[in-house]
Image 1 (cartoon, rainbow over the protein chains, first blue to last red):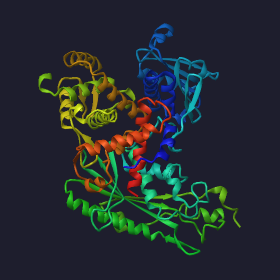
Image 2: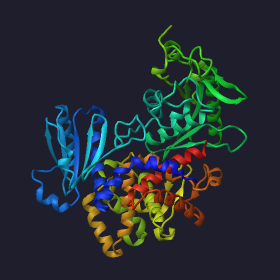
Image 3: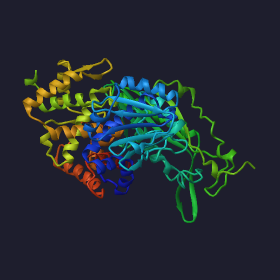
Image 4: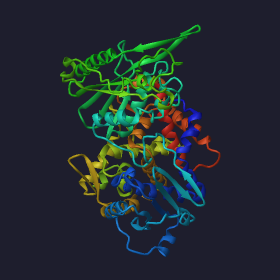
Length: 365
Length: 204
């Protein structure tokens, strides 16, 4: 497997708070970071970060001996911490949680802003405020770079037990504005371009985006991108749950216009219309039948995900589309036949509308 | 009971139960297998021989790492009252009992600071990255040809030295990208994440 060195530095940035803790405090810093992150995760499980309108500081001293000397008050356990914080956040209080030597918690809060640097010389301090988070380590502040914009906090990853819920969230929040990093490359011109024409053969990008998203959010599941093992095209994604007979097969289709390899000067495009969704639905039902015939004991369902990049009156990437034309298909759902909808092997269809870039459209003419 | 259980998987299971970060709870049996498998990988990445881990894993048809020895250790811990398994398959840990059990085990088998460090880094990685991503990243074969041959087939992990060398070389690429001593956790996190990106590219 080839590890891409160019990607390493980008990934490194996502974990450089760990590196900073190590550089400042050595292996004690790494240990301390783990303890702080555990607390952060617990807090955000109790109260989603997007519901918090005040500061959150979570602090752990590097040297446990310092903790014994300076902490006062009656520390308490995690269950009481959660309830205590819920009440303080309702009052919009800025909160400082100190993790004690014994792994218990002390809480202070204030209506005034708390200065993290007052605490970070001998501690690691996590800080969250209005969707921005980072660590104060010694004199330095290390902001956290999230791998995807749809995450409010790196330490508050959603998890779902059902594919339907995960796909709903994906089509509502993750895909439309390419907040998934993988999906940024799906457009000709990238995420910051007009988002009118899809890149050449965008299906692999779409599949990888969905693959990574489902791998992250589905509980106790593995997600695999399928490879051709015989002459027939396999389904795009397969989801298995440990210890369960359930298997989900997902077929990914796209509709809209994509750039195809040009011959000479003229740019060629590939167009796919809504009928492709129907094709995809029949395909996934066929995959389910084949899967059931070879793995009789499994309960298999097929889902179709259609990435919808359609635009009205679009001829080429040079076009300046009106807002009306750019968003023409926003609410244009695709009807599948009643034969498909009533088929027991068909779990459902999710249409994922990919938004154009509003600032790159023109006013209605 | 302790006499008829292999020591390493049992000690690992007890240690993991005793040191499980509360935000990772509740954990399932298969999560425990994953944490122990990741710790084994950490040990390999530190240059230790695969045999030093003392028990092996398979990657099952569904892509989950699994060890029969470790699973027996989990069952033993449940029978001993150190873990409790719910109907939903989630494990609850009796911290008081685990603490004294671990003390006894260390007095019998000797301290295992290095092994516990690997387990500790495995749990810290699970705090920093989604468990699903860790599983996707580390359950894939290292060799591209193997991906095609072994998809949907149960296989032993780290069956041959070439596979171990490959994974070690992947890690070295990551480690050497850091300007100075990066510690233990940063390169592990970056390696897991970069593997996931490489896997996506292999399937394009």
